[in-house]
Every structure is written in C-alpha cells, then in structure tokens.
Image (tube, rainbow, N blue to C red; front, side):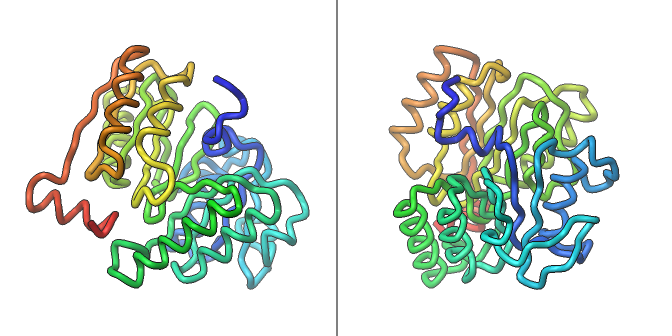
Length: 269
C-alpha cells in the first residue's frame, strides 16, 4: 500500500490526540482515552495500548489517567496525526479547524448532534464538512464508534475491547454492529485486520474505506454493512474492484421499517 494514502493516518498514525478527554469514567471522552492508552476499557497496562504518543485535550487542563491534559491542540507543540473528537456538536467545527492549523489531516468525529437530529444539525454537518475540506482535513463520522487496527494496537473508539488481530476487514455504518461482531469474534476465535464505524458518512464514505482495505496486505477478506448509500454507483464500483482482489461480503440494511429507523439515527435520512 502506498504510504501516502489519504486514509493511512486513520489506521497507522504516529500520534493521537483525544479532544474532549474526561476524568468521568462513564463518559465517552474517558473511554476513548483509556482505550488508546491501555487498549481496552478494563485495561491497565500502557504497553498494551497504542505505542505512540497519546495526548489528552480538555480546556480545563489538569491530569487524567496519569496523563497531562492540554487545554488545546495548539498547546501540545508536537505533530498529531489523528485527532479523535468527543465534544458537543456545536464545538466540533472549531476543533477541526484547530487540528488543521497544527498540520493534522485526519479526524474521527465521535460526537453526535448533526444530521440525525434535524435541519439545524444538518446545517451544522454541512458547515463542518465544508470547513474540513477547505483546510485539507478528512473526517470519519460524525456520530460513530471509531476505528480499530488491532495489529497496530490502535483502539480509537469507545468500544469495550478491540477484536483479536486477524484477516477480516470490517466496515460498518453501525457502531452497535461492530461491537456485536467483536464479541462474536472473541467467542468464535477469529480476528479482524481493521474495524471501521463510519456513522453519518459526512466526508469519508464506504468506497474509500473499501479501496483502502482492498489494498491492505493484512486484510484477506472484506465485510461491509451499510444502511444507506451516499453514492451508490461509486460504492458498487469500489466493491466490484475489491472483489477482484479478495473476497467481499456486503449487506445493505435499513430496508424494513425498524431498519430505516435505525439508519436515520446515524444519518437523519
């Protein structure tokens, strides 16, 4: 795989910052920081977490999980490859703009409060994407679980635990499906090369992740679950091209009334 692929920072970053890191154990910001530092929610060994620098950012400062807390991304003073954002929706755009200003080109927006909540949220999402594109920064999300790359010990999600390393690349619009399949992987003793929850797919869409997984040497087969397509023809072509390289299984959900309701919780569609 070419080292300059636009999605590389999401799967193989050299450093990660969590904006919205929190000392409250029940919060998403706490779970994100703990998963990056220790690999899983019940982890306690730093050597089992992400091997590169992990920076906690919260405007209150202080210390969380033994880590100094920076009041802004700019205060870090070191390169940051990937920013994981867990702040209220109205404040996400400012974080993305600051991330771009310090040279970061990849952000995972965990935060909800966008198109799935109505017209105001939709406008907020459109403004977020426009700002990111203007600055040259790519987004996964918003309203997503995050990204896991087990071989790199990267758990940039708020899921309880990462999957074992293995050959299956998992792409899902639903974070709940990702966590369910991880539990199943542990019980059935199979592993994943990557697990990606795209959420609202405001910027990065299915086809780009499929293309990345198709070229990824660790991924020997690809599993896709989606509830809605932003660009159906483009996704189909990406799946077709990937299937020429390795097995691909794709499932389209959201066709029943219950499924459509679940899909709208991610996209507002």
